[in-house]
Image (cartoon, rainbow, N blue to C red; front, side, top):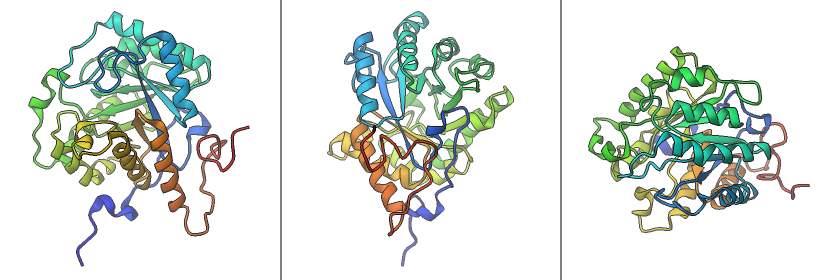
Length: 316
């Protein structure tokens, strides 16, 4: 009998890894759902759909009703071939939206590669800095994040993603000897730099960077070797939503994304970043129930998390 491939050997999945600096409701033994809110005119999937203030707020509220735990606000597209927006434009697009959502009590992440935007967003109420460059795009990022305190009185969460360059040059830098080990080595080096700069280890999340400087086959190979990245010892954010390697299977891209989100739950990944929240919540909830065992015992979900998203009844 052939050995089970490592990604499908769920007994090898790491223990649940929680992240410091978040509300108690987000310290739970299930994969969190980060809903994408692009306030941009040119993002590859939904550019221009939510780039007015009212449209952004309405979409964020819709994602929360569908079960999102976190809203990830981004003001700069990282689509292949895209060009960077100015710092002032990114600030104008994002900060007012972050402030409005935070005032509503919604956990907000700022998707940015700029230290100045990260700083302004945290001051406006965001709890998370989601940096797709892992500090490579802005040499001031680590020091800036290390000096910040969120509205909860804690250091912000810092998500570091594997990255090899901006959109216009990213695919020219694809090429790996052993992609799992290569990604883990490069990403781990940046995370160590973040720690040396003063970002607390317990506030760090690693993102393997699916779709960034990676061909379609690279992405599947990275999934197959994800244990290499898990071995870094940090909670993982998985971001595959609507990406080309999923839709290349000639399937609905949201259905494909949801299936991979279910796999993230089985591998005890910290969170998934998705555009279509409802289908992902359904897949995670099903996998969560299967993981609970034949008697349907309740899992340890943390304070108030047997809740609106995954509880048995309607929210009060």
